[in-house]
Length: 206
Image (cartoon, rainbow, N blue to C red):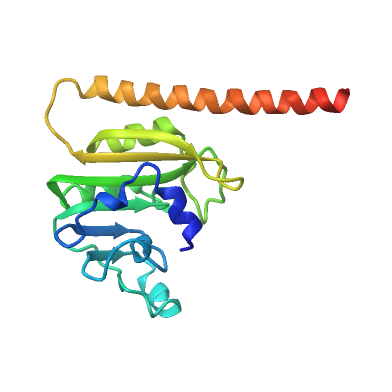
């Protein structure tokens, strides 16, 4: 994973505030090299998990955190899902499994591309932001979420910080709130795109 990808992940996620010496971290769908290779000290307690672990360990043998292909039966203070859910046939199954892996006061960090058509073989999920709000809300409490841009290939990203699901009578209200906030941001993105296109058309016609 290159530094440019880490820089894009930085805005919503505060790596500099993690107490690496005491925080148990599970990096799900880590890819060949965990993002934490670039930010965590040698003393960090990080478990990298990916179903393609055998291949990734082979092609990147010198990594700091070797990858396991078995989801550990352990509770973690921080679980990350970066560029992962849209690659899965059943992302809900993974989220159900992670409910028993997150500590009671831990956080789940998610970064997922949306609104981009993919081939079913590589990206079986063609998520919209409301799909992800509903999906994650069904298993965790969403603490914060939003949209950002991620270059030309994957224009939009939905990011989320979530916690263990609590029993509360206002969960539906929070789901509507997070959906509406994302919708407002999405509308702004499209309004800017429309203005840019209109400007180009006017310059071309002049």
